[in-house]
Length: 241
Picture 1 (tube, rainbow, N blue to C red):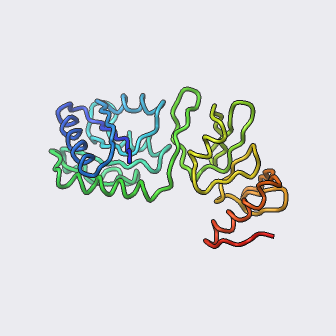
Picture 2 (picture 1 turned 90 degrees about the vertical axis):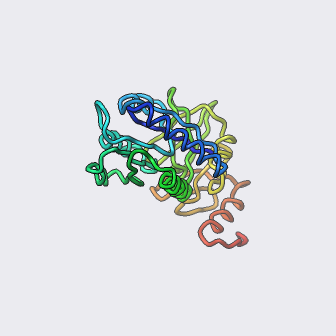
Picture 3 (picture 1 turned 30 degrees about the vertical axis):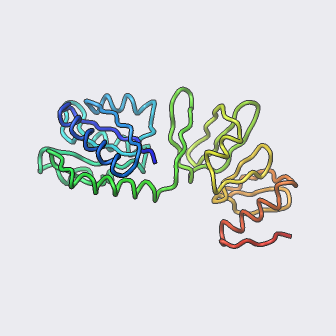
């Protein structure tokens, strides 16, 4: 498994030490963990504006300029699943930032025996959440939770990925999106891929979503979609009439 980690700390020495610990933890667990260090909250936010595909953020609380808690609040507005671990050299700061759902607080110098269980918890939380896909949108890399994708529509050389928060148009074939999204999505038509978790009802020639949106259901796909819908909600395989 691959997990992308960021370290935001204005102390190069502390950031380097935590990077080494992350490498040791990843090696022991058999993970691939690319790590990037940022010397300030501003530098992280500048990068984050174009690339939001992060899984774990180890964040110093007290830094010159924008502090770690303020940074965490800004990130939380766009990503609820990022695992944030606060690192501080001052015990007075422990307790800051509960509203950003920080995973843990660690005192400097970071202790390997304390850090590794926290990272294990971070991975467990990431695995509990539904998967995410990273989409190239207007020169940015956008992380989109799979559970937020309602359906994908293909047209020309692009697809529209319709989510509960917005629509993303990207240059990918529908077949590639089908592979990326994986289990839980079915082709209801040659130009449509729909999330089973958003289907409210089926008829002979259309799929109705929870929000009332209607998608075409082709004759060749009808039996398969009906069967997948039943299996998704009941766990049982029934023949469709």
